[in-house]
Amino acid sequence: MSQINLTRRQFFKVAGSGVGVTSMTAMGLAQAIDPVFAKPYKLEKTVETRSTCPYCSVSCGVLMYSRKDSNGKMKLIHVEGDPDNPVNKGTLCPKGAGILEMVESPNRLQFPEVREPGSKEWKRISWDEALNRIAKHMKADRDKNFVAKNAEGVTVNRWNTFGMLVSSASNNEAGYLSHKVLRSLGVVALDTQARI
Ligand code: SF4
Image (cartoon, protein in one colour):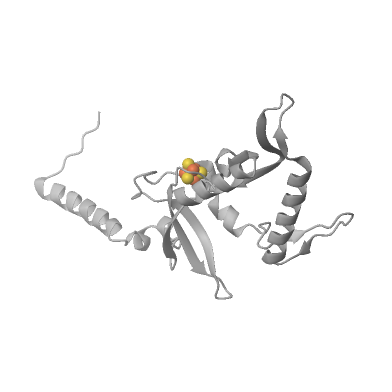
């Protein structure tokens, strides 16, 4: 077994240089001595925004980092769990970890579109037109398919040909109102995106 012989003076010299390197690293000076640390910091010049994952009622806290792109527009570049949030303490499930892709996806729909019967093309429409069309289709379908009584004559008031997916990130009041309105119309198939 080899043995290293150091004088007391030599020992303090080696120990001192070790402390010096450790301190330099802690002070962010590691870039100066190790090229591995010379890469630019990923979150440099970003704006940090606290938010809540929109996917399910767990409501994990997220930190969102944005930076100006070459056109001067803020662009989301990184998302991670908020370590200070008591719900998730910095963790995210795979859905939450994919928020960046949802926000910045080139396939993301950002306005309503309609494909008219017999057409192959999707056409952009206004939000007002979209809501009016949806209301019109809902009424026509309900008028046609609403079931007031079942085969035994028992009142059931069901609208089985329509379903609604509401937001699991809604607050209690919005959830209560959605539930009341849809159940009063006879909607049975009511769910949130938390189960998808
Ligand atoms: S989808 Fe995942 S990350 Fe988002 S709130 Fe639910 S558990 Fe949290």
